[in-house]
Image (tube, rainbow, N blue to C red; front, side, top):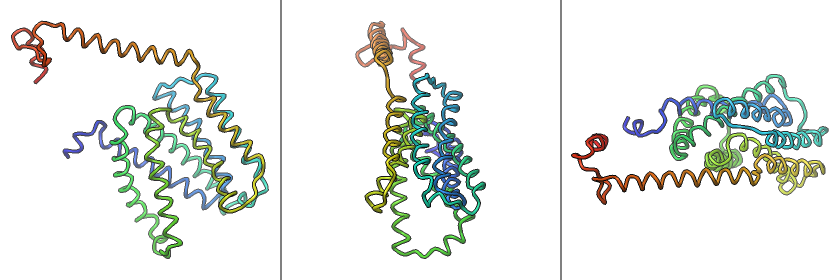
Length: 288
């Protein structure tokens, strides 16, 4: 109860945030059972327009023509990956492609809501609180959901080294991912995060080359370059924009300094910054 009073954001908002994030991950992972890897890669991009709309509506983020061009170049790079692998075996249809595709679309929309919510939280409070509460509620929700929906799978799993090490590796990867996401959201925003995640498919290509010694099409490398260029276009700030931001920072600093000087010049304020009750009763009242 005491910890809840110290939170900058109400705990039940974190509960809703945890539910959305857990279900987004669960639905997308579940989609791999029903549809092809390629379909997941393609439909997962639906989170990008969802993020743009949500940040524009709720966070009042402004998008210029250059940012839309950057988004288009990034998505075009991913489309090249899909076209280059059109005859690959991982494009085989799953047992229920329509169900899997709907799962990916739904999960992508939840990802967008989760990312935009997290961006709002890390800018309103602090990332330590956000990650702590997401971890607590995420663990509780995941535990309840596994005990209800995945009991049979847990019983049928043979827990040996071959099965355990991939889970450990996945857990470490997700720990690193969720530890760095709040920093990226605070600096760049949810849209930049989702665009950057498009490169994960490109890094998978390098793993295929060096870890599994598989041959990949040359278009993969063109697609990787295209996605990187799109990110640069999206995140580039012209000299005018940089000058405006520097001016805003300078004005904020001057205003804070002026406020400090006015406080120092007020009669009755000593070196310790405390006003006398006789001359400033309102200040004394507010200090209580």
